[in-house]
Image 1 (tube, helix red, strand yellow):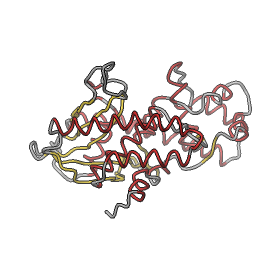
Image 2 (image 1 turned 30 degrees about the vertical axis):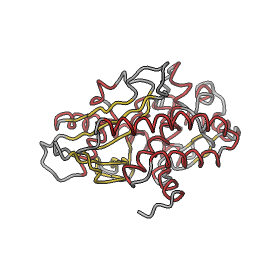
Image 3 (image 1 turned 120 degrees about the vertical axis):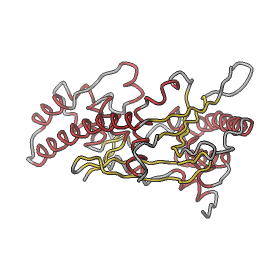
Length: 323
């Protein structure tokens, strides 16, 4: 039995070669860069998860997250401290915005850090996702997923309900529940702009965007998801047979170039993929497998290990949380 997450499905859609290297071979960078939009977003997300899920102070949690990062990446201390200043301004401003607009007046968190696995309807495959916070709106009676994001702007928020990520989470909640089919699933996304408030910047700095999906929308999502799952299952089985038979690189290349071909994107590949220098070698006859190992940049392991390696756990331990 394999469990497939929305992140894996998204990578399969975005670039099959990247999926092959990351999810089939289990390769990843030995050391990720600790500063930038992605790690900043992770730490801000953890700060609010600490506050809403465990009653901890969001700013204190944020500072612990950066302290942990500095301990592990002392050579990036200056950059991390500068980023912490930005993140602190974002989080403190958001706390003020939430209070001023009574955003939490009717919202109650009912579940935290749920690792949900549900049947996909395809033998041998399940769907998996981590629901950080599930909230209940006492005014509307709606139950939904509460998520936190950081972004440069709010340009794409009008189409939040079309986001594959949020459709997937709505689908997970539906499949994990035992309520009538006519229930509408969804939640709320709270986004913080990656900018300090001041004279040179213009509001809005924060935004809450609801997203809700009807049964028909989720049925359509399930049909598309199952199609991708069948594709992934077939490719996995094909590679399993190749490697079990001890096939040489020539045969492996023939298959990976045919079914896990690259989707080169000039702007996105440079920041969204860890294999940009290996990818061309996989088409030109080079010993790319040897390069992966000899470079010293990569390690092999479970691509889902992060489900158990929780930053929030380390934050709670450092702050002495007892619940």
